[in-house]
Length: 235
Image 1 (cartoon, one colour):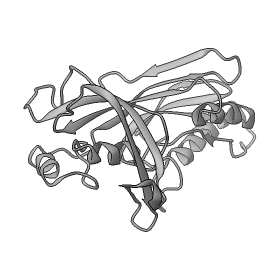
Image 2: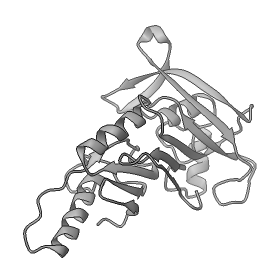
Image 3: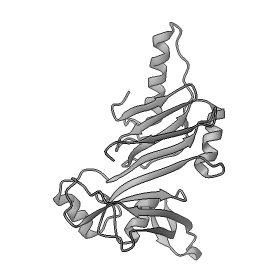
Image 4: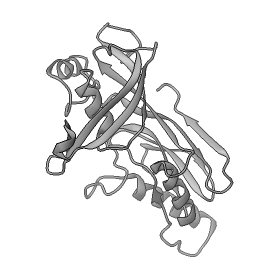
């Protein structure tokens, strides 16, 4: 399996993984790895170890996604029933799933905790989103944030960045990146939505990845409803 995928937990119903930055969740370009393909290869190899018969293509369902540059925790379902239960949690139709992200932003948020509400419009041609007014056809995007005491890119505060925890209340295209940039605090390493100053800071400090990580995932197990919680160390 691709070394950018680490399995944190597995049973007969689910697989929980640590996705490394740079790998797509699904349908990557030809020749590039993606999570679904690599997980299927892994499951086939595991079956082949325990059986002489050729393994059939395993079932892997995507429950929620992360942008290709974003690191973090993902849960996948190994059967259709589990996929249905987890998908309802991910969409908010059923309670149980919570995702918390940690970002390093360039600049300082005036209020140390709060809520951002914007209308976002996706442009499929440029694979980007922007903040618009509701009459322009935007969809409501909301998140809650809290500035953390811990800091920053290299654990030594230079006074220019802040570490922020984010809880998504909606799931829009590039939502965290767009809303934080619109609030005047773009994510460090975000060349797509960053300001001139934040991009210069990124390049000057040799930062090679988007400083955004989905580091905390909680959900209810689809088989027995028990609480499952995963936290990435060092996020």
